[in-house]
Image (cartoon, rainbow, N blue to C red; front, side):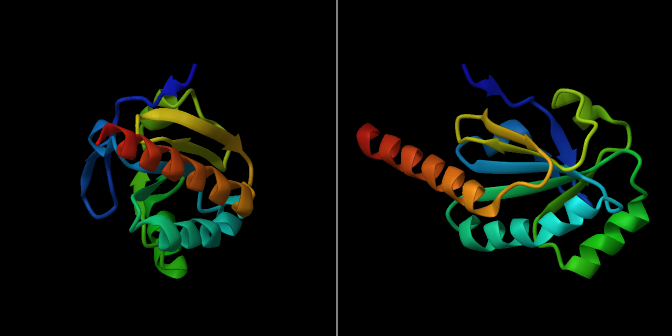
Length: 149
């Protein structure tokens, strides 16, 4: 039985408020990361690639910086890597708690359009495998749309 994603809201570095439940119907990648985590930094090009390839089709990416990460380091990393997707600070650990007490970085969640966690991985993910998972979700949701018409 798929586990529903927590009903949380985020405030991005650009002061945009995002209610997770308002993103139903979209496929989401949520990653917990830190600017001092080598594996996290290694994944940024993967996330940028996924964002470029699938954002128009409905993929949203939200990067949640861990509570111990200094906000100025997060901003510096965003600027240095030219990150196009939303970044959130989790200064009070509320988001890490809501997602099952995330403590290791990187930890990535793939959430389907129904709002359920379709996949979770800790450590660097395999880009090809993640592309396949996203494609599969897109194929299933498009098939559902066709059957509802």
